[in-house]
Length: 379
Image (cartoon, rainbow, N blue to C red):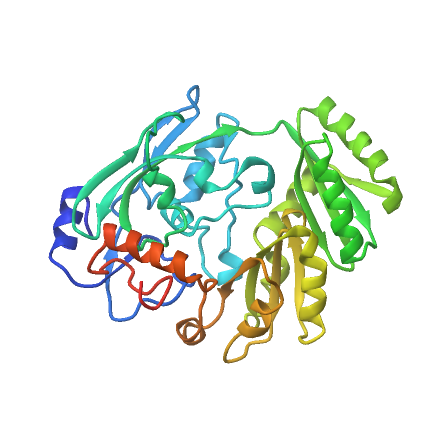
């Protein structure tokens, strides 16, 4: 276990193949890394900087999300992109670490309003696959001239560098929240209602549809503002039927379950996909899939995100899933290691994008020593 950037750099510079691991809760995301030595990153832990007045936090990648969220809550602040906890979905015993969150680029329902992880990262420090220590970004928002390397690390699944420090922008937490609830809508009507809500000036911070049950629209802020926007939104959506309201405690619980994909976590036998598509196309995509497969699903991000559980087969129905849409991408989130090693876990890239990805990988890790094959077989 390395405890300093210099020590980590010396280990990587020796050569070999390394699987980066801190808590290991995200090990089931992406393709399995075969024949690699585990590089223990748990020594890079703890919050090294937190300035509530400046809305900045810096921590080691092995720092638990639970510790970070507890620290932020003392000052009524939060990671606004709403980090999900996939422990129940993936069968782990922890919500994970900051490094895993950044490496996988995970964001929750508030992403449609607050942005993704890459929109909140300010700076990073780490060691490249060349064994070189480097830093990028800083502690303020407007600090970049040229290529923003910090954002490049988000969603790279540890294939570019071993991060030793991460700096994030934090934001004030909402004073309260309520959720407007519509019942009995078809997928088509639900997407219409969510689209209308998102286009309004009601500042909806979450829009999801649970088929056969309810369509949910979250409003956050100070109490009077939430109440005003709730009534305004109910009036705007009256053509979709009578609406109910989930008060703060009920609303938080419901959105936590959506964020953490509890609806599809039961029964480890099913494989789970996450589809990112054009929101208006989601009903026809779902209809095409359900005509051919017995599945469970729900929509998030106003229909732009579809979570879908399919029967456990040798190919996880990859061809059928990816053949159901023309624009977007599908990521296999939960499946056996054998299946994840056999098929494309991530959406296959067009040739030009694949070549660009390979060039970026070569720039940071020319010998492919860091998490080799985690994202694609040859990268």
